Length: 166
Image 1 (tube, rainbow, N blue to C red):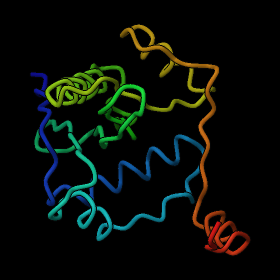
Image 2 (tube, rainbow, N blue to C red):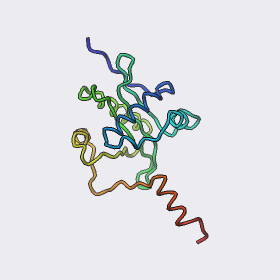
Image 3 (spheres, rainbow, N blue to C red):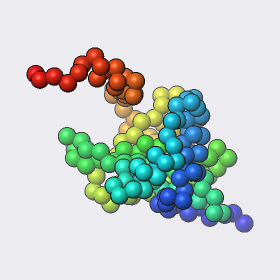
């Protein structure tokens, strides 16, 4: 008999598995050393008084096999939006509809908040993800580039351009 997959909001007890899924995604995205986040960071940032993100997990036979993690943003053009930061399903459970179930739950959650847009990034080489998103009606924009500044770059910028009166 096939096990039923349950999608539920994550709890603080799920933090170790959430971190493991984040690490699995980083490995899949060819940056296994990029994760510096700790369990304590996730507890503080996601399960404290003012959670910075929402996380849904997919559970099968009492084992978490995937997650969708996102957070609110604000668009000066649209208003309230949600950003889907990560959608990950353990490799051995892919292709069974688990990712779609997590994706659907996140979109329904965002819609309940009356957001005007949901956005996320997808790597240009991840064609299966691009195809999946496009099949669900999402637009993969090719004319926008994600821009980031990490801790080192932030520090360098602050040192190069110290606070000053203009």
